[in-house]
Image (cartoon, rainbow, N blue to C red; front, top):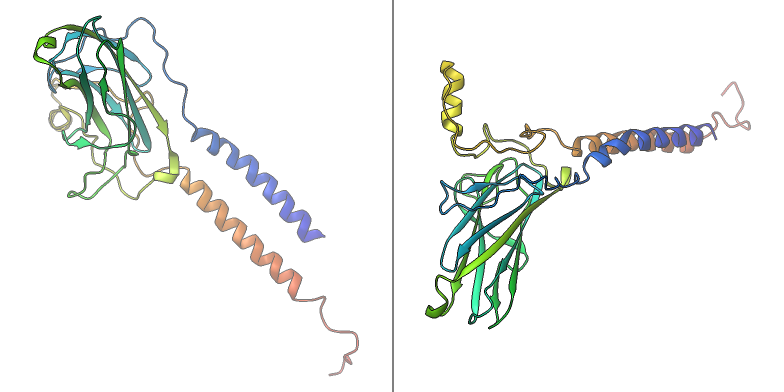
Length: 266
């Protein structure tokens, strides 16, 4: 009975201690639009319009244009990019596509979602979505894993009739990130996130001079160090429970001591 009460109290304490850690791993509320959302898009990687997670950006353009946005993604996050293209009243069949590139400008594949979609003749809009793989804190140089840093979204039409080229369209782009937590944690981290101008920023730290950084966007709570995750909490909880189970098993199997039928002088 004493062992049972001790185990029960310990499990209750562990549940209370692990509760906040589990809550911390849940996705944070998306940032609401406060009237400062971008209303234009860039035309290349270097001129990509910066947007924050949870912010809906809009832009006007023409069919045939390449529209670029950029956003930050940190380790343990799974970005979801959604785009809506509002088409003119009269048009033929068109095929639109969104591509997502990481800080090294490597195209990242979508886990799921319709990154390429055809709009039938006369359709008013086309909706696209791309759910990326979870961003890793570290990866092998030869791997194509998504890494922390700036990500680029490119939206363009890939198939249309020549008569539709140059027609005006309006677009909406939104990026949301889900925090996966310790389930996607890996050992190791990058020295710096893959953002434009990070080399210039590192040199400025060494000589004390100030230099311009090409990208200023980062997650709301800053870039993570890459070594901490809620996996450490659950590892510690699992080890403690294993130790308690061993103590309890020993107490239950060792018996009550010397049997009464055995003479004391033996």
